[in-house]
Amino acid sequence: MTGVLQRQGAAIALVLVVAVAWFSFPRFGSLDNLRDLALQSSFLAVIALGMTFVIITGGIDLSVGSVYALGGVLAAYGSQYGFLVALALPLAVCGLIGFVNGVLVARTKMAPFIVTLASLLFARGLLLAITDEGSTTYRVPSDSAFIELGRGTIGGFGYPVFIAVVLCVIGAVVLRRTRFGQSVFATGGAEQSALLMGLPVARTKITVYTMSGVLSGLAGALTAAYLQSGVTVIGVGTELDAISVVVIGGTLLTGGAGTVLGTVIGVGLRNVIQNIINQIGTLDSNYQSVVSGAFLLVVVILQRSLARTKPRR
Image (cartoon, rainbow, N blue to C red; front, side, top):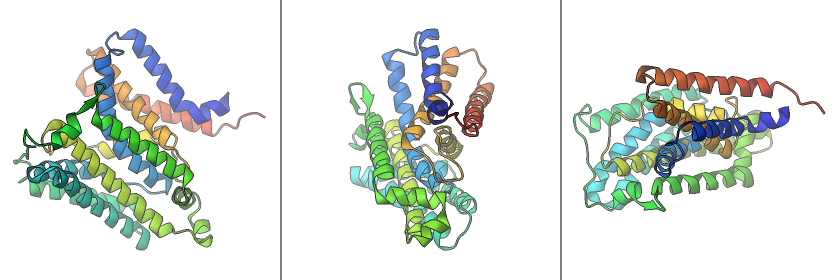
């Protein structure tokens, strides 16, 4: 039983929370609420996917929140020049920021915390420069095909949901079924051993940080398409949300272990909790983050406690 809880603790917690919410709040199980929940989860899931790869290598990426916001502004700005520019511009710029992060971490051996903290400040500063200190809001033209990327639906569920699902499936396959995925695990689990085995450790780190930047930029572009504008104030604290859902999903901050499915479960658990708080309605907004953070902390502590408990044979 303990072994099952160690491996599936977050999934069990998600099922229990959903079950309680389903029977306690009639609106929770409504199709409209589930659609909104899936849509809001999709943006964070895309960002957290990249964070999963980074953390498994033993790194961290604090820049994803600012890069996410920058991607949204760049997408809205580029939308006036057509769909391709609106999508390619944030992916290119944000991917470049991730690439620089990877090069500095892999080649200069600088601490990921310091490198990505600097990138956080750089991306947020670039965002403010583009928007004249936030006074200019770029809007996506109402007749732009780019809007469909964020507001189009299939069966009532938004395109971002399906994009996130496809990306997570691809990410899971890459992580578990390819040589690159094995290099990611080896780099985080025992970097020196990986080097002795001839694995491309530096290239692996550069790739995962670039991936994190591209995915954060994509999430920003999807958000801009959904909101029909480049909102400058989004992304504050998103890096902490991404890290928390990855850790809740069972990925070790020390690297070497983790799953994409666990991250998806972590995203679901976090957003279901937020949704329940909104369903209650009587809780002051100032305390919503306190309750949500406290609950997530309990989940993480329980997981770590279970991880230290060896199952009986």
